[in-house]
Image (cartoon, rainbow, N blue to C red; front, side, top):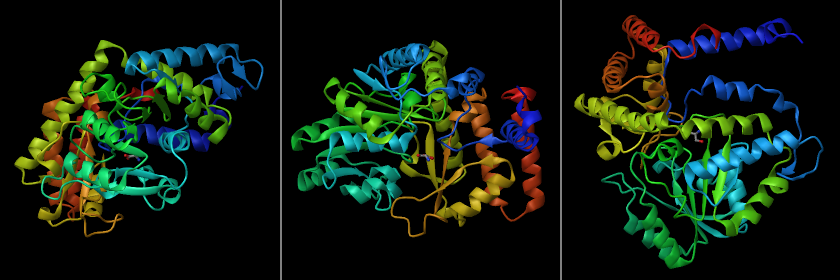
Length: 414
Ligand code: DSN
């Protein structure tokens, strides 16, 4: 059979350009990372050819002997990594995984409690335009206006008032530890199911750098492509009593055939995350984020909560008189990808909010340490200050490219 280059030179050339972009630019989007070649090899394998609706030993198609072997191994590794009673590795991505949890644990119209999106939550935690907010009766807790931290007394207050059937803990833009036990105790007080979405911090948990909620919570979801450094996808972990309902909602409730090539790549990433070197990676990712946040604060930037316990930080740009969009565009011009971000109680709109979110998972995968994190913080400051000066931005871009070349990613044959 022909190679991609022979069959489709246009797509092949686009992939080559993206590979070069990834080599030569700095990735500071907190939810992105670089997988290993081994993970990508599994993603690009013949397993993409197979249909395997159902679960191990109970498929609706023949020829699944090796797929069963792969899925069994993936589940065993995920259980070992997170200490889960049950794991479903088939969810296609984070939102479908979360949808499966809602369908398994509550009924449409039931009350659910989650962190508000512009306070660091996620669309699927109850935003009115998302299936979660459309189908369930959401109350949302917020961070404290002064500290920008989740105040567990306030969460308890809302929970006692609303008496939700399920409480969600988890975030996509919050930089402090979550008090899992306090969430569990509030949920027990009101008789709610506990659901943790650890998509952002799963790798830090797997690397033993943050507390693991899997033994504490009823149901936990995570994507596999963020700090966990695997392929795009997700898994659901739960107590045995939710096993049947969770499995039934993933298939046949929501999905058809699982993506076996991606699930094999998940197994590879679990194996990688079980290695001692992954612990060093998780710890270094946090140290790098703390170094970057520290340097930015030294340079007069307001970091929400005045620092970070994990891999990310949200920078409030109001004191610098630039918007999130202006900063994001300036950073893109110098070869740094980041995402604009609302800040709690933001008066600006989501498309041009008051902040940006930065994260260190990808930069740490390249092998960068705290010295580079501090250097990058300085370059971010330079780019934001000179956002209207293209000549200056070009100079910064050259510095970024030079730094990236010192920490090569995949080399020429990505
Ligand atoms: N889009 C992801 C993020 O950037 O945090 C969450 O789904």
